[in-house]
Image (cartoon, rainbow, N blue to C red; front, side, top):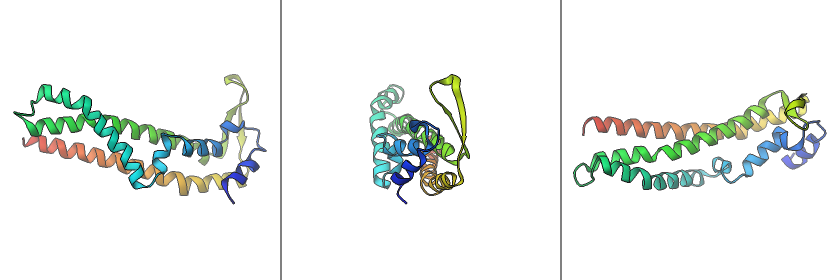
Length: 170
């Protein structure tokens, strides 16, 4: 059954539409930033690579002040590359936090929500059908994205570690 028909069936619950986990999932999946994780591998890596290259505009001059490229090229390159990793790491962490939040909301058997403001919080127990659907979405859609983001953070951490080891011998 397509998600759109499930969406209309899930509106019978008392949770406002924008607070329903299935709708939060569809919103995050369609958003400009969070959809990076949903793209194919090239579409996922390209924005991260662009962020890294843009970060060089700040890390390059800072590194050049400490390690002039004409005198210490390798130290300049290593420190610039390490500094430029900060922006992609922050972006990946934000992707992870957003997707883990939606995944946790989908995985939960209850949905805390507010009808009109912070003072009237309620909790809705998901029917078995909704809980099963949400669990399948977590298992087959959200978890692979979280693993991809974790792997990307691991690769960046490994690159930083390798750069640190090289630094020791320069």
